[in-house]
Length: 353
Image (cartoon, rainbow, N blue to C red):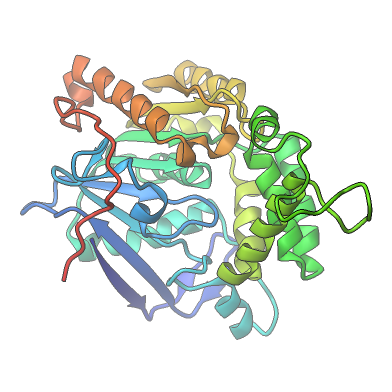
């Protein structure tokens, strides 16, 4: 694994018409690009992820895993507007003296494309992403139809009214300076009721609090949410949260845009996901098929809710294997070596000196 920081000093025009005077992007590559750069796979991270895929997909991406770094090179770029090495929303807002512009999924994808020529990559074997990353993978398929043969979009569709409502409440909390509350709302939306019941039930907080003797005493699930909120405040910028959730809200696909897609599309739903319900992912697959796109549906069966694509390593790997096997049956769709097993590993990746 190695990282590269890029700086583009020319103005970058957003979809809104507003200009950024420069763009910085942090790119992480796992595996080794071959001589003609034909083994590259582009990965889009989720809302609060980073370009370090191995940090959040350990056991899915590594030498010998479902996404095999011994065969392929996986390229991930921290989003424009994110907090982990690229031009952040905070830096944009500071230069604009408090004004935060709208940044769309199209802007983020187009910023990534600034790197491709520099890296010498003319086409990706595949483009993969989960949640917001899945939105970006689909946006890439529309905006750069000739640059990838395969799209794998996991747990992602245009947001429903419920998803828009949850993001609205989170940004309301953010505007009041409470990113901890915003994160706690998000965590609830990422989990399933069954998972919460199994893990927490009605147990009192594990530090010994008794919910029956004082308003400040919590149940275990409350302590869990508070812990996540506090930890999140330390690792993610509040401005980036506002910017990226707005980009999520605005993501949509018209029929005209969908018809631009040339890649094969695999959509993955999660059985217990209520933020991006599996039924919505299936409906999007049906819509793509009606519009002439070669699209298939696959499902992660897990009680982990929306987070299953990150937390349920075995199911995520199984579904990737299912997609790989489908591609073996149709040579035009093949880009992985499916002859390799899916033995899960817990050692991360080799790091360049």
